[in-house]
Amino acid sequence: MRSLLVSVGLLLVAGAASAQAVPGTVHGEGKGAHHVIVADPGTIKWAPAPASLPAGARVTLLDGDPAQPGPFTMRLWMPDGYRIPPHFHPGVERITVISGTFLLGTGDRFDASGLNTMETGAYASMGAGMRHFVQTRGETVVQLNNIGPWALHYVNPADDPRNAPKQ
View 1 (spheres, rainbow, N blue to C red):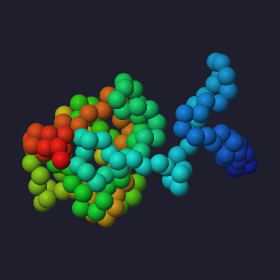
View 2 (tube, one colour):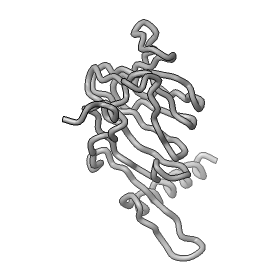
View 3 (cartoon, one colour):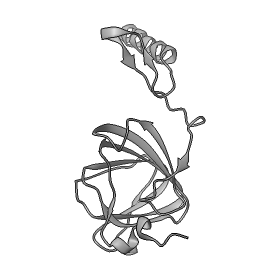
């Protein structure tokens, strides 16, 4: 039994190594074709976060398209002390902390005393419409695995960076 498990493990590792590809690569043709995405932390390309988020964050899209119906995966990098005011999303939001400390609170107003500390490896899932707010401690990266279309709506429209006067 042990040798069978070792053999299966080696086959999986060998298969994963031979299947590595850049996002969007399709291997094979026709009915048996499959899609392999490998996101190596050293090669991920970061871009400024969407205008719906306060300035200073960066984002990388690993899979899918958050503007379209269907699953997507993206990572959000935030600097130390970064805050996202109370907001909500039309769909379920699933977050995994990749690095740093993600402080998450719920409610219609930012309340630092209500922040829950999420360290590397922590996971949260919030139902559609759940009002929440965020702050970081240290540089922090979170991964969102959600179903699009994704949108962010601020509880207080004055908090929305898209409503700020153009400079």
